[in-house]
Length: 312
Image (cartoon, helix red, strand yellow):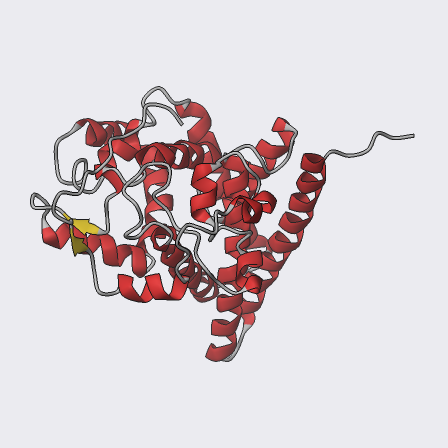
């Protein structure tokens, strides 16, 4: 008799099944958007794609934390494919995201508050870049620069310019000091090759691709800071467990339960609901998102901003 599968093995199988269905759906939606004759149909398919690709990103997030599948080989192989749908490099995303867990709510990621020393124009540019989808574009652009101009990026994180200091670029890129550059570059090139191969095989149009990924950028960017905006100034607890409809929460694989994730970063998405403390505030995603459009706020007097943690 075969041994009974463990809970993590069952979750791993579920994740692979979700990834297969979501990946096939994303490709089908790109194909359909490239052939839609009516603008409204292309738009509708793009909206659906924006949610489906967020499911794939949520699985990528699981892979980054090593909890998509109990087999390290399967986990990382899945991460490579999932990263190609973003598109970004898997190891690149791992460095950036695990660094986020150390930098959360510190000076390097305090986008929601204006400090006396901040350049207001740059703070607002960052803020509305998050809300309008340009934050997503930074991923592929920085990945491309990492392949062709890695020295320029290294100079940036060692510099003292506004991009390195106020914009947090120095803190983000410092995680790549000593990272396996060759492997990261190969994965980025693999993601680019995947995108080109899909475009050729499915005969995608630029308009269809841009519609789908533009709407995904808006959808993805809206959540990436809504789950932190004006939360507690604490590296570990500075996040929200946001309220959304059960359907949306399932599509995003409980990604909105972000405080629970930051408190238990190695817990798979299936366990997050049981880790939510009902005593903690749980604002609605829509409420936070709408308030975000008013712009960043002045840092409260006497507020203590945490420092970057030394370890994940």
